[in-house]
Image 1: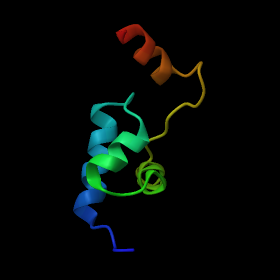
Image 2 (image 1 turned 60 degrees about the horizontal axis):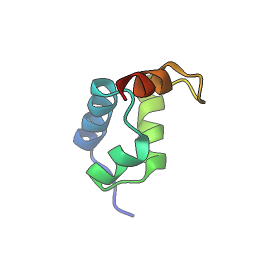
Image 3 (image 1 turned 30 degrees about the vertical axis):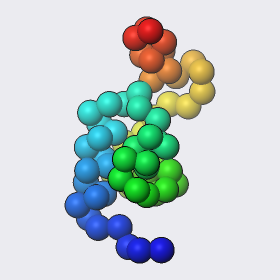
Length: 65
């Protein structure tokens, strides 16, 4: 497994902040890293998401349909 640069970490966090409803697995595919890494970067940066169908991010996605 290759190390992930600080620049990629910054870009991942910026992507999460720019589009809070985007799934972590989509972000992981975009940058060629694992979903676990995306989640860990988000937690380390203090970017927290609500979980479950009643979460605000899920409601935003449903309203956009």
